[in-house]
Amino acid sequence: MLDGVSVRTAHGVRLLGPLSLEVAAGERLALLGPNGSGKTTLLTLAGGRRHPSSGSVMILDRRVGSVDLRVLRRRIGHVGHRLTDELRPALTAEEVVLTGRDSVLVPWFAEFGAGDRDEARARLEQVGCGGFAGRELGTLSQGERGRVLLARALFGRPDLLLLDEPMAGLDLPSRERMVAALETIDGPTLVMATHHLEELPATTTRAALLREGMLVAEGPADEVLSSEPLSACFGLAVSVARNGSRWNAAAQGT
Image (cartoon, rainbow, N blue to C red):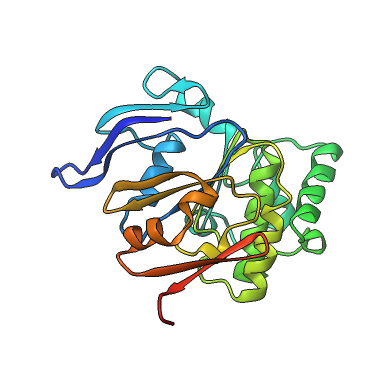
């Protein structure tokens, strides 16, 4: 929960807020907004990776500032391109998944039993990468690497899963495979930042819209992911439609 939170740079430039946002356990929150709207900044707060300039942050019922964040972060899974850049490309997909148990970047200083390796392969299978266990991360496509990182996050059995534009740069088939993988997740609270409604899984329950660091709208997905709130968020007349259980959007008149 973010309560009256603001984030400013050392020079006083406002990056986020003031805003308040609460995500209940087990919810699937979509976080949308244009570039520079504060989505990544909000995720770093939610992941316990930065402190607010003002206001209070509660993560998994623990208040930031009165809890050991190193311990808290073990309960939080992350998926995003920055993590891909930090992992060694020579690691196999299975080794990458194993690093998720202790949220480390290499598996060499930990001991893993047969049960750990079986579970790592099961998580790869869950996200549609069962045949990649022995493949090096650097040989996988961008979409395949993203799903391996999702398997890594799930292997850590997180209570909170944060996804920072996990489908950025993916082609249509890779995007749809990632969406399908996300729809298999059952358990952790999930917050996913994106620019595009088409990337949202059908399991999305709530949505929050950011513009210039401020919260434009927040609530049930069916109410927030509609033409009027999204038009205000993106500063463009947007028409939203549903295709089955999925959303899509286009500028009005196109």
